[in-house]
Every structure is written in structure tokens, then in C-alpha cells.
Length: 125
Image 1: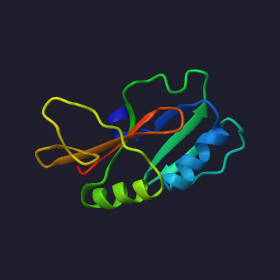
Image 2: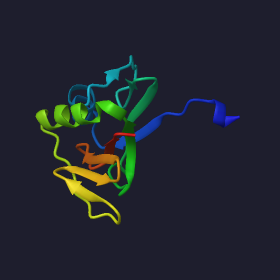
Image 3: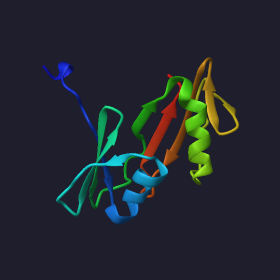
Image 4: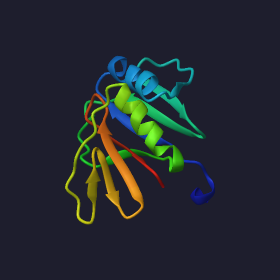
């Protein structure tokens, strides 16, 4: 049953007034109408990203949100870099580095954090 249904990402933040400009202006997600001050849904392609305030924000040390960009990967990395996003550098088994980009065979990935330390990523898959 759930395999036939869409899912959405849910990201906890400490302060929506700080997080909203990052998700809207830096990442370019479209905010959807909301009547709540502590919850904001964003459109990301055909997906939804629900950002909400929580005292537990930023505690996850793993990736919470990934975009699979295919051929638009390099352009998206450059756009984020131009908007001031700093990419993380991890030493991962089987992966090398091409500047900010982690490389394994034909796969290229970058990781970066939102204002609360949530880890987001882009990949060329």
C-alpha cells in the first residue's frame, strides 16, 4: 500500500524564521500556503519538504534530504556555491574528492548543512 503513495521529507529546525530564507532563497524551494507559524511546507519538484520547529533540530548526524539531479548536478553545485553554501568534506571509504565533490566511479555527490546543521545532499544520479 505505501509503496504506491508519495512520501515527503520532514526536517526539524530550531527557528523557522531563520530556516525559511535558507530553504526558499538559497535552495529555491517554493513555499506553500501555511496558516501555522511553526510549520512550513515547500514544493521541491513533485515532492514536498515539510520544515517544522523542534527542540531536537539538528541532532541527526546523517543526511536528511537528497536531490538526485542527474545532468543538472554541476549547475546546482555552482548555484549553491554562488549563494554562499559551504560544502562538507568527508573521508568515506571508496570515495575520492574533486574539489568539494565526493567521487566514486561515475557518482558525484556533495553534502552541505542548513542553518540548524541538518545534512542535505545533491547527487548526479
